[in-house]
Amino acid sequence: MDNSERFMQAFRSIEGYLRKINEDYRVDGFARSLRDASKSDKTLRNYLDILLEYAELRNAIVHTLTRANQLQNRIRKSSKTSNTLPKC
Image (cartoon, rainbow, N blue to C red; front, top):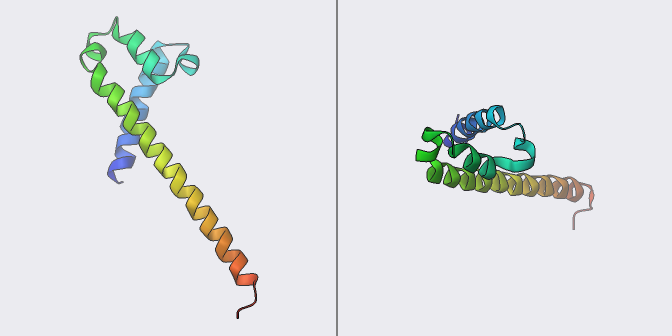
């Protein structure tokens, strides 16, 4: 398991905790749920800033992986197409 996978696993654990304590998580999302929960949870309040930065890092990882997957798909499609074209 590489670092990004370990990070995503840990992030999902935090997200799971927020889902348990905020029934409106799907509407509110991570940052709003975190801010709301930090008002009554001292541990979350102490780590609020770093957890919000982790949310930004998570988004960067997910979007980078999405772009990489899209590029791989384009390359695969292109190579399949180029195999069917006559060679000069």
